[in-house]
Length: 471
Ligand SMILES: *Cc1c(COP(=O)(O)O)cnc(C)c1O
Image (cartoon, rainbow, N blue to C red; front, side):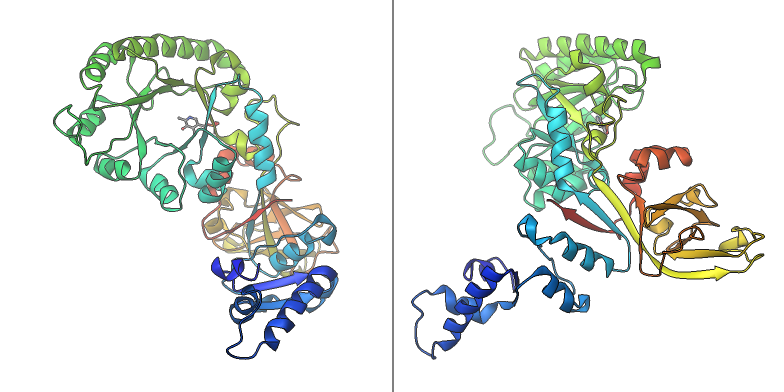
């Protein structure tokens, strides 16, 4: 450990527990006893001594008793230990001191949800996971590396920049880019990113960036493409009438234009009221994909289903499915209420509590209207710039303080908002307020302001610190 930690850029080690304290301090003493010019029997000892700051505590309590969070700044802290040490108390203590807003992302829950959807697939069906929009707010790199470890087959992002960021962070899985701008084609190729091609214009633009001949060009590497078909979403994609011309083009250029997949997107996979329409979309997709495969003279990956579709249309999994919101713990199909675990918990802290007399108004525009009785109002360190929607103003939103609901009072401001804690006498400045999480589910909050869980998740701004936990 003494050699490995500095080699990996770790500069500080806090050891907790009687065994590590005894062993490590012994190592330290031994290395300190070595005189200049002497070589250690075990070379790790010197490295250990010179580059690594070390502290040891016999117990978690002993560490917590002396913990001054001001000792930690601009550091990445890995807290790791056996269950019995109760290290989650350390994480909680460090987080509580942050006096701000934290999005906690539970990687075990993410793994659990991934497994749940995997179990729905027939053997051999591939899994593409959507990590667009910062992995639905959860953190693209961390989610992508978990997915890589868990052997997902494909990732998908909306824009080239998102894919490039993943490559630069070392993600090696195939990545599809759904909305590639023609000026990014070279960049896409350089980063082995696979564009979705949805119109003749984009196809021509892509062809124009390829070498002129079909002969192999040694210095040129190409990325395969995905053909997007519009079967009823009316958003992006080739239509059924385009298929003959599209097939002819793909056939003509098949040597230098490898097609990895053919896909479509359903407009209402989650809604039984539209199941006839959905079945028409799936039937059209089957026809169009077959015609294109015939033109190409070989089969390619066909994929149509999002999270709700995976659960509701198991007969239409084709060769691959595209998992999104379900991975992040939101039940889009109505079939998974108990099967999925919530992944993200958004927490903030109470900055101040005021006791207001009857008749006092609260916040901008005095929109927190006067009441007949005195009340306690808590100011939270979260506002619309953090992604706490302004539509939560004036009682539409609630947060949990000490497990009890506190309604929003007045208008949500840019960096702060106020909640009524009159009925929560234990509430104190510095306490945590849960904005959403297992006890305050996203779909419930979304319904209160007429939106969907997707929007609340992806709105959590990048200035909110993400903390990744695993048990
Ligand atoms: C976002 C997206 C998905 C995933 O949808 P969920 O409802 O989040 O599962 C699938 N396919 C396409 C084309 C998408 O844009």
